[in-house]
Length: 252
Image (cartoon, rainbow, N blue to C red):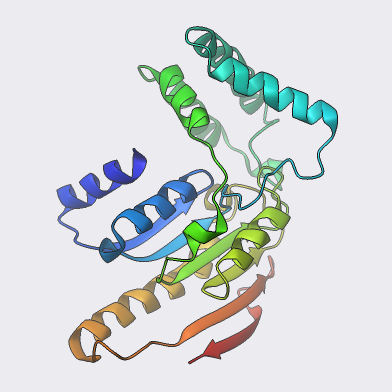
């Protein structure tokens, strides 16, 4: 799957281990990678992660359940699933081209280049087959599968994200039981790397640098039986300033 391909890319680049940065559904792939080869993953940055520790349909209406049942049925019938996904993703493509479905908080920031970037994958060979496989692989991540991850984790969420609800992301953060850091970016939707790239970079680079420095110093000098502090931090970053408010707790 995606995790295996990711490690093959690291091999091609000559990287033994690194910090993985993943967005949306890619967060699930990053978690799979960290579980399958933990010695190669120094830390995770999960941006607007579409990773659910409980059903996203909790509290949903009966109509929503019926729509989900219909969609899952269509995606699991050979032949029918390809026609279904082509139809639905062509609808999505049309919405994107009309700036109606890109997940921005401020739609005035959507450029032609961004629209082209999000519609280009549909020009590749077998894009429909890949899309069916992606949707079929979606699953709920049981909290117990998250407990074995003994690496630093940063979760960054757009406060106005309509694609992945902030409430679901906070539940994921809680499922790590104090082993993750959570930063919420105000005036930001589901695509902070396109909508507010400078603020996203400011939010994640200090974490990445700290993880890499800690990893190198630990290799060089720390005894194997020394347990490093686990930092639990929650931040809200204001859109008009590079400053942030934070509350930090350190468990030894």
